Length: 63
Image (cartoon, rainbow, N blue to C red; front, side, top):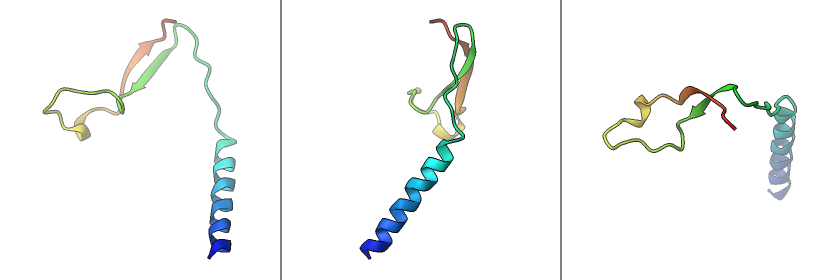
């Protein structure tokens, strides 16, 4: 059982590494337009979470 667990863990680490090789951070500059995720923004009571847009914007970067 421990060998199977180690094998699954190693496969997960390899998949994560392979997936992250194609990702890169986009450098934002002042004046760029970006969208803001609403995931961590609180809204007034009575609004259904599933009806709120996932992103708000575009907003310019100021600093």
